[in-house]
Image 1 (cartoon, helix red, strand yellow):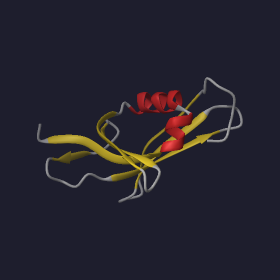
Image 2 (tube, helix red, strand yellow):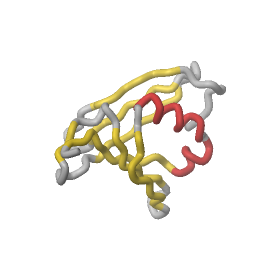
Image 3 (cartoon, helix red, strand yellow):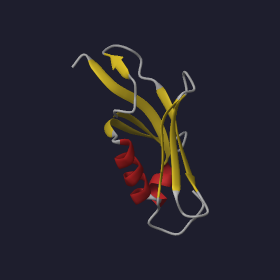
Length: 106
């Protein structure tokens, strides 16, 4: 396997602790397969290195690009998610889906 669709992104620990089902639904929507997960307590985030068809293909040995996972819950209760590459500022994924619970601050 010389090429992979791989990326690195963070999720706040509090968001994972408080809304694990929401994170699981987002990961399912992104078709993310984590290959490395590390709690970064100094920054209060969990860092994921993951495979996803939404990430551009990288050759083995290339640097893994960093992404910003943006999660917004709208007043209607729907969730809007984007994945933006921090290197080239391109949005590689965006989706909106209904939430199973009442709107709340994320």
